[in-house]
Length: 317
Length: 280
Image (cartoon, each protein chain N blue to C red):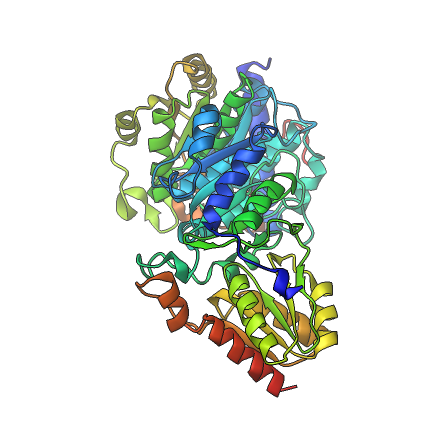
């Protein structure tokens, strides 16, 4: 099963987002798209050309964008807000909290350039706290897809999912490997059966986990590999079924180790079936300028880091 | 259609409701609520087309957004008195398990509220979004939004003020309550707005002015504002009010921004406000 997971080329997850919008906006006329001066970065050019009346350029005014989206939702629209992850969350947290989450508005917060792999722009733009912020909002669905295909599927699926959604994706070209795999909001994707250790990964780190699992297989270590694309609501059943089988876990995310996927999994484990867990995540720091791969190496998110974490977890069994 | 005397009579009851809610809860914001009673009565009993059976989407209705959510007592009274929910529910204001939260919210399902407010500066943007949705839905009705004057200090307001004329949001009537008071004192002391109407006009808004405590002028100005919609510009009404209007000891001071009267002062207020529709 693991051997069947192969990269069929590289495209950015944000391109998958644009493709998802293109695929669904014809049939669903309630979809409207807003941007705060980042239409090109979010790959919504086709939508703008095809549906100019359903497109709103707000200018560099993210707070205004979030609340306009809330108002559009009141009128029955399904607003997709598009900007970088940093400007989609921390910059506008109170607007999301009051006008969208607390008010239960059907707004889709679509956030590109999340995490370290934004690269050279540096820490001002590399948000590593966004999953935590969004997870903490009652009623918010949080999705962090792993490649082009999964991001496309998620961009389409959220239109039919009533309620506020945070959809997190990224900038760099990244291996594509989920084309024939199913996507369902809230349902973990079981990518490979294994018996020695559970690896739970989200976003770009899923590919790192795939490569790590292949390395570990060479050493005779069998990995139960699970893609958690939906961090909230979390597929607790899938997580518990896996660790009951393997007895230890690694969580992998391009995020601060506080507040993200690892924390979410740890809560499930401590409350239900405690097993050793190791975290592959940024260790409570900001990022910096560099290429995506250099940054993943420096901040402990390389394939080798996943392998090492797996061995630490195994040793604690 | 109500006449001016009837509207004034309703406003008197609304003012009683405001003071009684705040006094009963020993919490809330009476000053700004009293100042805006005439405006909200004019909107809900005369100017707006609206349906108290309440649909969230507000299709083919005029919509009202309260951005300065702390003046919830006046909105709750006007919503109840116009049939959105039982008047006796006003007795639950700010109490545990109430739908009448300290600041208005959709979370408990109170009819009449479409988006939570209280954290300031967000309502005009929400109202713009609602107005854009009406445009997309070919719905000719209007969106009204009330903001406070202290709230104009929030940067997001100016993002919205810039957006609306650029996008010709001309089915929107915004009103700023110029009572010139905020928590820490008068706006002149805290952060002066200068000539607010000229500022909005410079951004491309059609600007009207009115005395928000003169019912005839309120109705006439709101109707004039309606007649100016659909002409490519959003409308602002720069509305002068007296904070605490109708209760002498609360008038013209920020002291009663967020403070409840004791039993003696409540009785004093009741003596100044005629009971016209029956207390809850």
